[in-house]
Length: 381
Image (cartoon, rainbow, N blue to C red; front, side):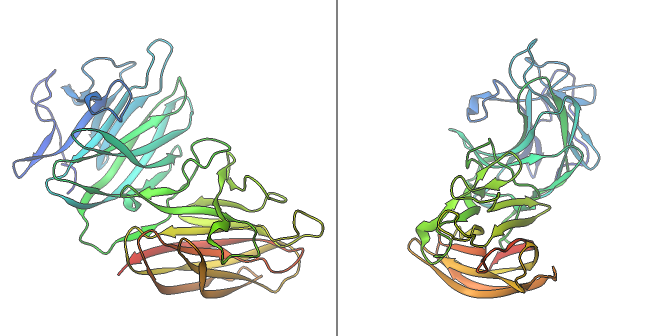
């Protein structure tokens, strides 16, 4: 279900034509969110038509919020709070589900900031007649496109999905263009990829870790401590956001473990045991996939290793299956020190809520390396 090629109102000052219909049912709507509290369903108001734009009938500032059809999609202008007009000026694109089921998004979102440069996020909300809940969020970087295909949701008939961009702080304005956007019933094989970018909500906290798809946590970044006992489930703890990467809150050494997600790949900086330091144990972390339902899951991708200390010939990457008590090794992949990519492709049976882990081990003393896992994809058979 895609956006219409043209979306125009019938008269200035009227909301006629918003929502747009297909098959006699409302499918897409453009809303102002005012006051800027998206969890309150009473705060959603259809935009009205004005000379080629869908605009807020009141409570706007500087011409925002407003939207137009442009460049194979919808372009939404919005603004952070301003001293002359407190409160965010928000607008969102709303999809209305005709029937109950799983829905998956496709297309891209691109940010353009033209006033200020504050951090900006695209958020996804599931809205019912009673309330609205944020189910996904991603930071957007100016001029870069974010792939929406990792986002999905389970909806009842009449429920809504809202794509809502937001700017932190004050005195910043911008627009997000949603290109080639479609929402599809979940008949295709369910699959999960890492986001293009994965950043935390605030420094020193684990907010944003894990991230969700379809309203359920799916990916998490963990520290393993003590790192010589990967079999014990309680030894895995979510990393916290440092402002630039995900790090250990305690028991780190030299900045390790540290993890970054960019361009859909994860980089894991890990360190082997060091003489006289905090238990003389390795520092490492795991990429964790959390099964949203029971089934057989296929995980594939490639991994390579680039050491910067020590002379170990190879570094093991283990695939683990973890329940609430223990983690069992499924496969061990040796990564050579020359950065040669090694592909992996395997299947694991998981119960809902159980986890699949990709964990670099650092068994060699006085060694340190970065393991990068590219194009990782999990599909349910």
